[in-house]
Image (tube, rainbow, N blue to C red):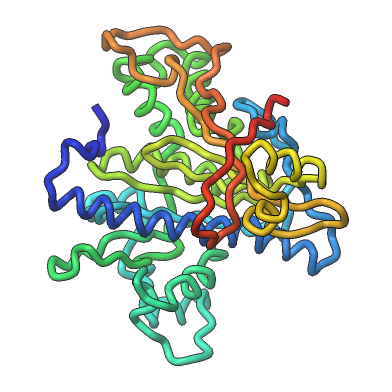
Length: 353
């Protein structure tokens, strides 16, 4: 049974809230594609630096990613939760009055360039200026939280409520929580020894599609994803990484990585032909930039969980097997340009080609 309640288990009222959340999330996905990938690419071009495209092998489960940070790749961490995080979770998700998105706090932190009159409504998702506000705060250290307004009169109103939010749950506790749910341990991370505990922690990173002990924002993202399972609603975490050059998205559906990919003229023609489309139509709706004789498109890999990374059907304790994969490639798609309305993602198998 899912910790967040599938649609068939919800009241009509909660189904409507779920639909509203998913609609807002679809729009947020589009913004994240633009900011994390297209805008990052443009940052490199403005500096006359070749863009460091991700190699296909880096998208395989358990792949090693080059340990190199690219300063012009936009990095950020955003938590978008369907409901409101209760105050009793502040011990590990550090959101307080001092880091609410108020004019006073933003001025004090110098996180927001208040050149014009501050508009208190711009932190709400329905505001015409919301995405400008979000983009301004994305570079701030740690995480941003977007959640439902706790005011009963405005329950379905979402806002960017807090910035500079630390995720302070220990990695060992997160891995222990996951392993207990998967029935690899019964009580304690170290109950079967140090080596077993280390294997569990490595598998925790693999479960969320990350190399072991990656950088700060990605580690915070996966720890937050595990912690938020304590709250009975769905959540979505977006992490932009300057090392992986990818948009990492973690939700109730699992993990995905979205990157920029080069396509030469022959590849564009082949993809168009395979999908009963004119090459010009594909170029217009899927190519976000051009580099010499190549088009640049958005490619998304989604990952599926294997039997090793799902709770056992019989609920019995079992032994971890480090050599077995916890993720497989579930889907590979060429995504339409941000804002394109009529065209869907196109299936495109490239990771193992």
